[in-house]
Length: 553
Image 1 (spheres, rainbow, N blue to C red):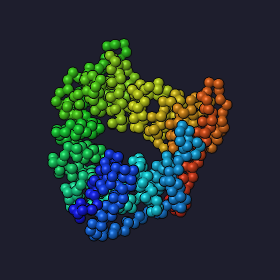
Image 2: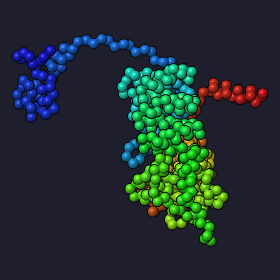
Image 3: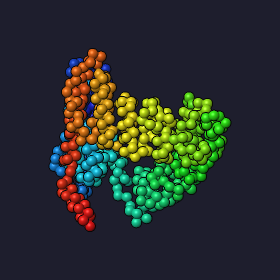
Image 4: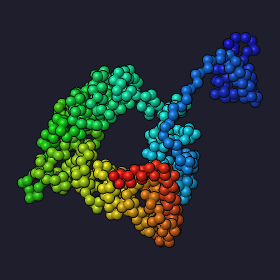
């Protein structure tokens, strides 16, 4: 129907839209005048035209009704835990806005922990809470992995019906479609050849998890025809289960036409201490670093490379240094980082990693050399070298004997077992306090081990008694609310009173500290209640009986 084809017909929709956007004082509405009634005339005309446009539409074929949601075979969430989840999803934060949060727990910060605990215990999400759960995950990307695991197969079913939740389709393997099983060789081949990129990434990861060699062989069948950005993503999947059998494929990728692919292949090969690339890097780095025994005290000397040749580039050395970095130090750092750490004791006089790190380094090369060793220890997951480079917790805050920063220390701590990590950070806090410890606390396992929890609480108490500016510890206090063991709550009761303020204390600091400790205690007890609500007495009885039966046998 043409609305302008006959005299007296309603104005064209486009003209009405233009008048509405520009305003009736700048554009006279069709069929009206430039008077005070023009806006009313415009709305009347728009209403009539809306009806006219809708009347001119032909009825569409009814959409196919969606099939039933898949069954979630996991046990139903306990009633008390379901009520708790509803409260967490209602976004009832305890904060009061502004600089002070009050004493009520911040429920939104506890939601990730609750989801992780519920998912680990294998509970099924209540169906009536799935929309709110998906809405929460839509707004917070950090929630998505745990939320989708807890939501189960029905999340994908709902995501197909609501475009607001399409992130669930992207996160699900194959966009929510079932991947072929290991016995379906033809299905695997067809999906790899014909599937969408997300489906192929999910397929490669699934095959790699159960049979690394099969995944590598699958990738090799199409490697030469893949796009550079796709090759990079596929190559990254080889990190899982990386082993010596992957070396020939990765050596071939060193000749790839994409610089990023070459760099990733070189990084993976350098994580294999027995690889040929690691050997080549060891020869190059060994030519640059030696021990000078002619001096009274043995000293490490460094002669950085004078050029980056084609062979070095092929092995992943980036020739162009970042702005502000010297080329020779840039090349040296890459060579040392990719060298197996096991080569240095023989190269440097049979010394242990701790003895090597303790040696002086000539000509101001210590920072560059130790920083490269730090990166190598993190890449190769070498705990002995990490301990040597970390030094003792009593070392200066700016870095241990090898670490150039607290950020490097945090990465080195990640190579240690959880208990050792917590003990080291507890010692650091006891010596240096909390002002420098935030990054280090972030790499510690949750809940914090008792020594670490006590060190954090003691340091907060010392800061309070010293009249320290309280808001500077809000970040650590927030971490403590989420990470401190709930069993520590009773120890904190003595810190809830408002302390007497010293003359040089920040105004109102005592009240803030008491409020913060009250919120901490309340949050810890809430976390304990959440854990109790997620318990299944029936499961625990079965587990206890099984344990007793095994003990009797």
